[in-house]
Image (cartoon, rainbow, N blue to C red; front, side, top):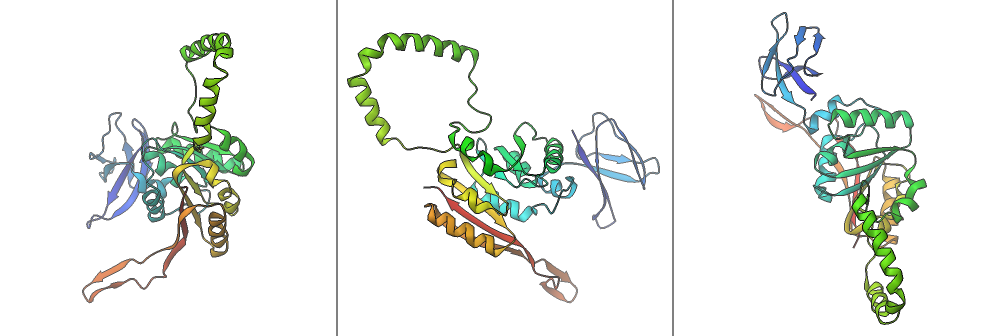
Length: 298
């Protein structure tokens, strides 16, 4: 289990952070750490030079700082907005496109979801897989190298979503037996029984394979066109974009295909400064990171 070791200054501010593995010898500019096999969060380690490091469990926000980057990752506040607005939770099936570094995919998996995520660049996809392993969610996140647009027909036709629908040997044997039995009784049931079944089918509602669809790609609108087929009823769409032009296209497409509760927000935060003179917003540049569009499939 990878852990974080932190050296802090006198005010408790982190001045050095390193990822270490149990049992390894780790060299730093502050000395060499001998990491115990049974290392636990909350413990304190000392280098051979006597410098103390506190051990901390790797948590979601730490992934943003310690994942290997292949571009600008989604910042924690925007990850929180996506998860909060869509309600991603245990058991959800998520289709994600635009993996990048993988911060969003890993965060949703850590919330309990099963994620299928697409990254067009094969080298970036490999880095994302390594990041999923670091986040301890490799079994919950399938990173696919490719363009999600090319797989939409397959994804739409999937009845059970990612990592589901694998029958056991017993189920297969039962299916074979049932098929033989059904062949003997087919003639008897083709009249009244089929009429009743067809009537039920006429009133059934088609359901998609995913509970949440998250997109961070320049051609997101093309995927949004298929959102009603991809999402379960009541499922959520979240589209993140740094540009207003692509956001307008996404909103227009979401309206055209009948999605509801469509809202777009610019994600902005300002830090606060506190000193002896008083308190005020920081004079640093306004913290714009992008536009987030949320919609629902009703």
